[in-house]
Length: 222
Length: 222
Image (cartoon, rainbow over all chains, first blue to last red; front, side, top):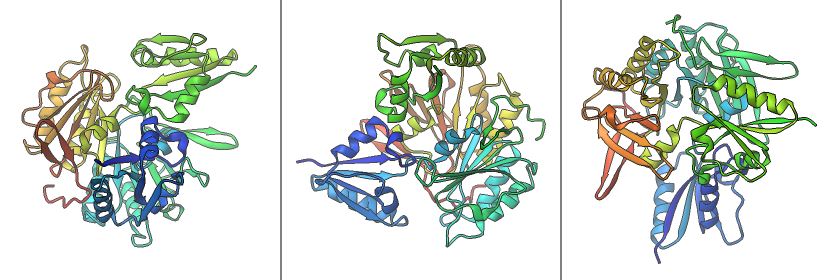
C-alpha cells in the first residue's frame, strides 16, 4: 500500500470558499493534520481522524504527517491557504486592484529592522500593503510601530481596513484611516490592508464602505 | 422582478479550482459577461447565454452587465480572479512563502518610470516579486527592461519562474535564473515570479524543480 500526503489550503474557513480540488483531497483523507484552529473548521466523517497541533509546531506537524503517509495512509495537511489577504480584499471591494505587497509583521524569524525597511520601500513606492500576523500576546507593539512608520510616508487620510475572521461567523470589518487606525482593533485573526495614496473609499449609508484602488496610477506623489 | 449581478473569479480556469460559491453563482446566472478568453472556459447550459468581449473593454463590459441586471436578469461578470499568482506559486512549491509583491508590468495606465521605481523598491527590500501582464504585442520590450532593472539589485543566480496557463491543458512551467531569464518565454498568459536572494531551488531529477522561499530572513544582503 502506498500512502499519500496532500497539502490543502482552506481559504478563509467556510466551505463555500473551498475549491473542488481541496474538497476532494479532504474527502480522500483518512487522517487530517493541521493547526487546531484551522482543523476545527473542517467537518470530518466518523472514519476520519483529526490530529491538531499548535501554530508554532510547523516542523513537527509536517514530519508527523509525512511519517503517517509513509506508513501507507492517505493524509491531508491543512493550512489557512493564502493568509486571507484576498478574502479581506474581496469583502471590502477592490483594494488590491493594482500593485500590492503582502508582508508578515512577525519578527520571530526576521529582524524588526528588515520589516521597517520593507514598510518604507512599499509605502514610498506606492504599493498597497497587506499586513498579516499583525499582533499576538508575544508581539504586542509591532503593529503600532508599523502604522507609525507608515505615517512617515503616506497621507493621514490613507484608507486602512481591519478584517477580522473574514468569511467566518465572527467576521468584523472596519474601514478607517491611517491617522485613526488603532492597533487594539487587531488580533491574530485580523488582516490589515493599508491603501496607497490613490486608494479611494466609497461610502454606503448604513453599510461598510467600499475600498477601491484604481488600476491607473500617476505616481505624482512619489 | 429584481435582477442580480455577481462578480465571479474563475481562478486559473479549470473547474477543479472553482470555489463552491463561484460555482453556485455561475449556475444561477442567465447571462455571463467577460473577456472572451475567460468565458470560453466556463461550461454553459442551453438556457445560459455568453456575452464575450475584448480584454481592453472593461468599462463597456461592466456597463452592459449592470444594465442587463437592472432589467431583471441574473447576470454573472466573470474574471480571471487573482492574476494567477497563487496558481503558479502552488504549482512550483512555495516561492511566496514569505513577503512578496504583485506588480503589473503594463504601462498602459501608469508611467514606466513608476514601474521601475516599484521594481527597485521591491527588489532592494528583499520582497519576492510576482509580475503579471508581462508582455503583449503592443508592449514587447517591458519585460526585458524589467528583468534588466532587477539585475541591478539581485544576484544573477536568483530563481525566476515562468508559469504559462497554469492549471490549464496548455500549462508550461519553466524554472530559470535571473541571468538567463528570456523575455521571449513569456506571453500574456504567463506569470513570472522572481525570487528574493533567500529563495532556493530544489532539484528533482526528471521533473520541474521546486522553488521555496523560507519564512525566515536575515536581510544581510540589503
